[in-house]
Length: 455
Ligand code: UDX
Image 1 (cartoon, rainbow, N blue to C red):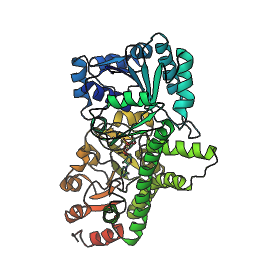
Image 2 (image 1 turned 30 degrees about the vertical axis):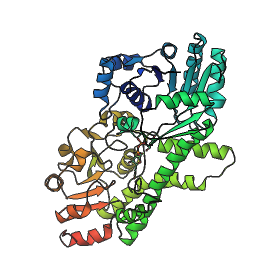
Image 3 (image 1 turned 90 degrees about the vertical axis):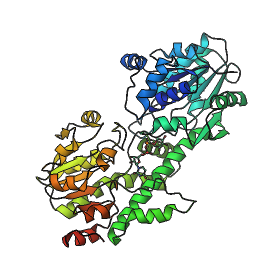
Image 4 (image 1 turned 135 degrees about the vertical axis):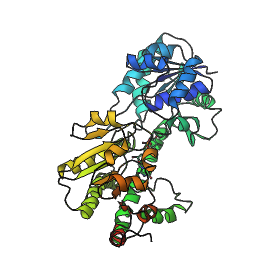
């Protein structure tokens, strides 16, 4: 079977960036959303969120007639040879996964297949608990289509590993493609869609593919919490955790990535997915002491950061703080689970006044909290006359602030780096009083007392 047309249900990071990649690889792609204005804007070449390189590609693909937005799932699936379910699977109160959008998508696919007699492959790409594709999606599609899996339609699970901020790049150049297949034919069709993607391709059963996603995110989150736990040990010994993790990461069995200590992990995936697998495992009677600790470490890290600040400046009552970076990481306007929120909450509790800067995320952060933060579109306005600066996400714009600017604009030349945005010694040598997660803070305090000379 030759795939020419692709339906992608869901216009979020996964859905839209994959739609753009499929279009670029020559497939006619229809990307659907439930929001009329998002579909209309996409058809004018305007994506619904910021992601580097996305807008240019959307414009190009829409212009070539290879990408279209729609609010009609049934119509999009009917016109296509394969459909990808890329809808959100947020956490419910108890940490388990809300599958309502997945269920709706499966129903629409079923309705579309009912009106067609050609073979079609249904692919689940959303992050869903093991068993969901076969026990939830499959029966819904069969019920609403009146057709049989493995005969009239194929079924796959194809987890997505893209990172926000480099979602376009990751969609074109994934490390690996995991194809969980109901049967051989379904897997063949999907593998063929990816034939021009140069990376390892794994074919396995559907439940394995579903769990690979949770296991990958859990391990990456574990590496981060591990580095964060060591950052606190390092602080006590006046050792630089980045040097330690460099030494650790050079072991090829470990590798250096995701060992960057900081104020913890945020975003739409790690907190949600680790919570979901913990909740699921616990319901099945499996204890998860390791993952429980990963989550706990992530919760306490922002508060530890505030304590670190208090240890240096004393009381925060009445202090004006320049807060740099609100998004959960650079290059995205996404603020889901950003560590900025617990840090800022705590700073307000301690009586501080907050002036905040972010290149893209202010609009979204305002929706997250009504705390009386003073937002600014320029970093210099935030630094001017503040007592000290805090860095929460290491945007290029923030990295490029010069030591002279901190010295000129801040009252105290004091910065607290939650992401190792700067190389500490070079700042200290230029007269900045630098403190940060996993840094030799005691040593620095002594050094800076002696007029901030370089070591
Ligand atoms: C993550 C996974 O990387 C991706 O494979 C999956 O598909 C979705 O979840 P994303 O949430 O976009 O991607 O961002 P990522 O770059 O992984 O960072 C997540 C969080 O971890 C951020 O808050 C980041 O600042 C933090 N982080 C990351 C660290 O604190 N230290 C690190 O070493 C790496």
